[in-house]
Length: 347
Ligand code: TXA
Ligand code: MG
Image 1 (tube, rainbow, N blue to C red):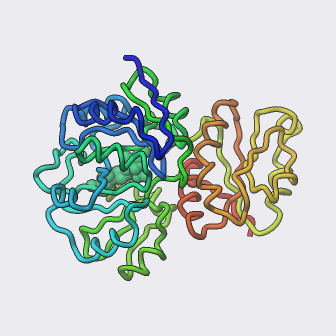
Image 2: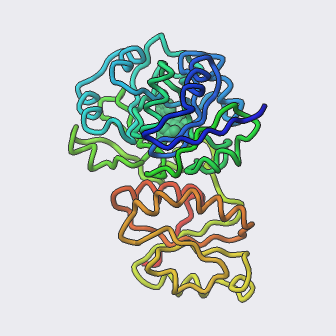
Image 3: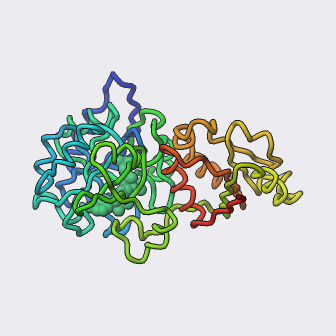
């Protein structure tokens, strides 16, 4: 299959019609959202959705998020819309919050990995919204990476993983947020955050009161009896060993002591740290995730950094922990998963 690569620069959408028609007619289209690139199919077309699982190499019991461009489409997908859902949609849509509802019979079980619930979100990206509107169907879309790779935050990442496997890739540049959406299950009495993301627990609780959130450590251990099927799969881990180091001071001293002479002068070890601290490290290769004061910068760069480490063939990757406030919590969740939960705490 030849993959057609379409570059779109909003507010001009030339070239999008062809991709929207293809999407409507059962073909796959990778497209940008504000979080990461998604691999879309008509959510109501079982055969199209099956192709997503094939193209990604994704286990068929891992459900997909259905993307919509207007709230009226939601009624088609879910049994009922609770007042909490109304409030959250009003506060955060379009945006990086996915809500889990009881599904309506219109949604095929292939889309929901066999579950009776369906995850829905309205992405905050002009190209995603325009594509969904033009296609005129709800769009099931997981992140557009091959299973086991980091989510793509650039169209080049999608091409790296999917060239020749899907008919269309739409490129609209880098994703603004950079980590995937928050997934909130509203089917329980107390809503549960199944995956932390751009919309934080504080932001949600300000709108609907108390919700539950599993700590990342707990959620790595919960893998045997997961609430969200996605939790049970091994998450992306770079080929090298990831060591996350946290602590107020001495992080750079600790890491520099660990680095062998060989690692200091080669590309075997990579240190990933904040702009403000990066000069303190003596590794052969250093990558910055942005300012320590801006967890958004770390969110926007972390998956690209993971891919770059693999490309270099890094054997050890030392990551300076980032403060876990705001979206920093979600970034650390992804970093801890990449490290298999291993965090060195120097305090
Ligand atoms: O930001 C995002 O959410 C991106 C963009 C493309 O929208 N999408 C994304 O999809 O990250 P994916 O498939 O890579 O991750 C979806 C997560 C998985 O962990 C899945 O198990 C969970 O959401 N999920 C989907 N439907 C669910 C459901 N009905 N119940 C519980 N968890 C669900
Ligand atoms: Mg994914």
